[in-house]
Image (cartoon, rainbow, N blue to C red):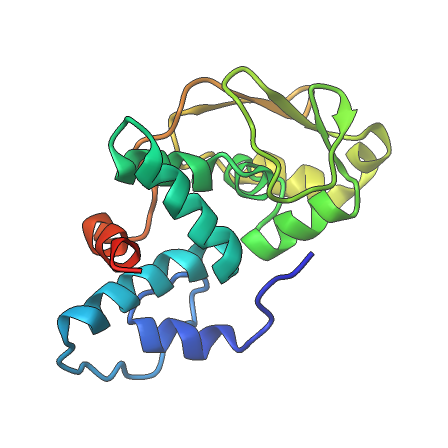
Length: 192
């Protein structure tokens, strides 16, 4: 249930990237500074962590799972982060922000394959169907969000009539909207 509750705009300015998808996040000037190799690695890690709203312990576990897999670590890491339930709810357009999507999951508005799931970090699979519970389909805000926000990724298929979506395939690195250098993140954790 832990999540980052700090000042979002300060974090976005420090990282130099609008990781919260808010139009006013980078209105003030960004100070550019020369970073060491370690500083660059740390900055890339912090960007990805801030974008997904994952705290350090869980993010570290995701990275070590990716490093121990037989596939390319960067792809496994992004697939693990993208296939979290709160992120998929955001990508489908049920919530207008990642924080709102996370709250929808924890409050029990979301169904996965017809079953209630209220764990934001729940790992989804290809073919899973994500929908609103019946009572939540009457909430205007959820319906308007779902109908107005088009999925920004090609691995999700939306069904506007039933207010649901299906995961068609696994995501790729091109599917994330934040510019992150994944090798630097892997280097950061390989030294620890």
